[in-house]
Length: 251
Image 1 (cartoon, one colour):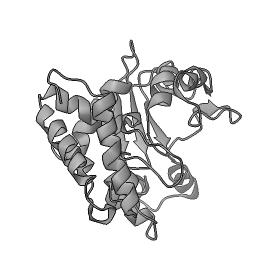
Image 2 (tube, helix red, strand yellow):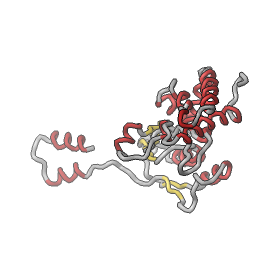
Image 3 (cartoon, one colour):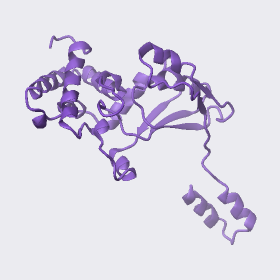
Image 4 (tube, one colour):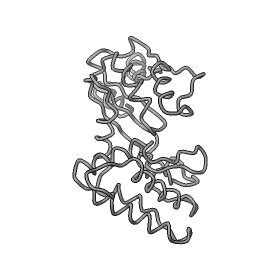
């Protein structure tokens, strides 16, 4: 925006008047709170079907804030974990504004691994980034990756905790961040929605730059600060394969 203002001033071809400068400097990025959340209702602490029911009416929107079919709408979220709120509520209501395009910006990178130190989210299948990666593996007939990682996780659990490595990280290696992003969009797009959607996640490098003295990035990288975290992550993948994952061959 500042660069555009400089170009406008330079293109005048004369010393700008006070009014001309004021007009140019008054340009700004339009921003406002488009989706309003009832702060009395918290969705992330609600489980399963109860969460889905809650998010269906927890938000409202500001009509008239977007020029239909002309304005792009960039929405900012602190993180995208399950994607439930986006799919069941946010995207539905933002689609009513009929923007030309919706860009969802997450201030956190893709959350790929469970957390065992604060909010207890122990199941890998809860994370939309993990589910999207599994779908990509299925689509490309790469079941051998799941089978190999499953076997490796079981072997790691036979070792002392201090010697274990996080084998779950290997399921993400065949894909780029953009490939996983595109699959997340496919999974979270509500039925009947036609507005183009794009998801942009914060990069890990950007996060480290923003938070220099952080306590760790295991949520995003799988590098747990304690051996116990690594052990539990391997166990979480075993639990997923044995209780959730399905494909044509028997593990």
